[in-house]
Structures are given as structure tokens and as C-alpha cells.
Image (cartoon, rainbow, N blue to C red; front, side):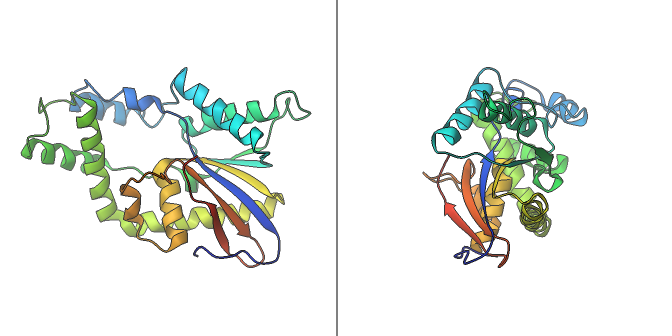
Length: 246
């Protein structure tokens, strides 16, 4: 799978988008590592939704951008996590408001292959120990600042990629195959995907034949927010048609 012309045959446009601003971003700073572990064990981080009003407004703005550019997906494929589902529902409501579809909305299907790829508890414990070793924590027992939160996450994430790279690649490839299957099963020409930043970045890397660790590097045009694909169901070729930030 790589970036190619789609050629002749049934073509499907796919809009890959990250969920709106997550609540968990405000759950980290000021908490002890014991509290963070408890939140994780209870599923409160994975089960968190999007922020209000910022996250809600951002989701509605995404829908308005789609409407202004003439986009109207026939199917929404969403990660099973709550923040992705909330984003999808808000976009769905805005896209169908005042139309014949308002009562039922655009069909939404949950796709396990779009579930978030995230570090394990062992990765976070490694990150904490590295930060203590490097003197990167004001208090060795908690995350005190936003900067510390970022270091904590990315150190864990890099270790996660190092240890589980084949599994990460396999999930991305499975997500691509599932997209093609969904398009064929539902006979649609436009699909909206609501997943997670690193997931859609990893999928992009696989399509381009790049190392998946490239998603850890940020640039001015951030593919972790979103991009567009054109899939040809007859040839199986996929083209990245808009590689920029949404």
C-alpha cells in the first residue's frame, strides 16, 4: 500500500480526522502518579470524553468546514472510545440539521481497528523513572506542569513504539483493510473517520511507506489532525489527496 493514482473503478473519498479536544488533557497536571494509575485502572482516562465548551465547539466547527466545502459523508466510522464517539455525534448532528436526515442522522459504525494506540502502564513507569533520573520533575511524586505532562507522555510513547512496532503496524494495516471493506459493504462514496491522532498518523505513514515512528515528529503541516484519502475499490490503490492539517 502506498501513495498512488487510484486509476479507474469505484472510488471512495475518506476524510480522516482526529477527535475533538479530549477531557483527559486536564486530568494529568497536578496529580500524583498513584492518582494517575488509579484513574487508568478505573478506565476514567480511556473513558473520558471531549471538553466543554472548547471540544464541543471545535467539533461543530469541523462540521461547518465540511459543509462549506460541500462534504457530506454517507458513513461515519469511529473509534470505540468515548471522545471519538462524542465528536462523531456532534459532527453528525450539525451535518444533518435541517435536512431529511436530521431524525436518523448519518449511519455511524464503531471500528475496533481505530481504537487508540497508547502506551502501557510499564511504558509510563519507565517514563517516570527516566524523568526522575534526568531531573525533569519538580516533584518526583507527581506531574506538576504541562511541560512535564508532555515529556511524560512522549517518553512513554517512544518506548511503546520501540517495543510494539510490529503490532502497531499490523493494527494500522488492519484499519486500512477495514475501511475498504466498509466502503464495499455499505456501497458508499464518502466516509468520515473519527479516530485518534497517532492512529491516523500511523495509517498515513503506512500508506506512504514511511517508518511509523515519523508520527512522533511534528511539523508545520500536522498529519495527526487530519487528511484525506481516495480509495479505488477495484484496484485497491489508495491516494493521499490532502496531506495537510484540517
